[in-house]
Length: 204
Length: 204
DNA sequence: GTCTATAGGCAGATAGAC
DNA sequence: GTCTATCTGCCTATAGAC
Image (cartoon, rainbow over all chains, first blue to last red; front, side, top):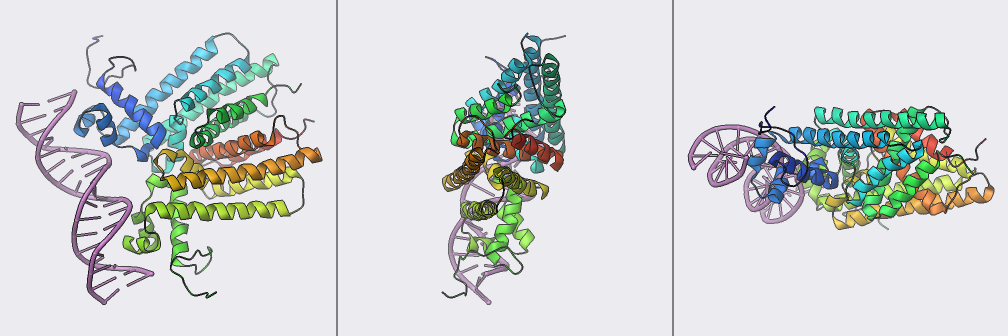
């Protein structure tokens, strides 16, 4: 495999990343703060100090850029989930690590990419819609697995099936980000997150 | 007081409402489904079968229209909360009625107006931002009052202060709407809402 | 109050030079 | 790969006739 550039390779975010990756970095931040309808090629181009046609060379449409954005975000998120699952610890500690992922996004003054896109779902191109749904489905599957582990261990207590609990954790954390952001108050998110997870521990 | 038209009066939504009210009706639906950056005067004008300058006669800028939107939505929401508070019943039944308000919005395939605006908060004009914050603050105050009632009655059980619980209820319901909408699945919202309120009742 | 006409800006996107 | 030039379309908003 040649390590030299094929036209549309995916690169990591790091010092001296490829142009495509830098475009994704800038666009990601813009979408997470302004929404898909609130950012433009012109915004990205200005921050990258290039002209808009250059962007079209890397991503031939805004829709394709959006798809790449979700793809990369999902991959990274899932990688982080795999990492959490690999390390030893109680199911509760894994849920705490999960909530921390959301908290870290919020502390960078951003909304979850897919939570933001979910808000503007009706205006999204079809492929982006599907990718957003997939992101939530992945999260749900991962959480249900951890919840089941916790139930078997006896460290977590919940009624109903793990999938339903997983869904309420996802929506609870997404909502906590959504509301905390206008207040610029990360502690507000943390308090809600703690309450969500606290509800899964046996009462003292 | 003359009942005849002063230029910018506020009217109720009903059969034969004033033009301003019909504009608000259409714009409200568009914002709740597409977001503030995803709707335009042209969309409203087309649905109302007028031209865009007509809209500017009633609301001289998009920002002012947005402010009027939040104002009306908040007033109606608060009125509904007063109505819930007036009728007798346990604190839990009031929380259930509260959650039902959100559920009704979702079942009309819409996001909460202020939840939607919270997502696009960074792109909002300053006055709209303040109005969105006020909406959440009102909700928080109302919920905290009901929660305190429940705690005194002994029908609700929660740790920490009522305000923190109120915040987590708001964000939980907003998030449940946010995530349920892409799935077009109201039952998903209901399940999460039940779980949020169920956490406030003594375990059997 | 609603219209026509229009301004002025920004959107996403393409052609073609370098 | 990035540029200049340009297209087409949509956006918010205003002037002024009716």
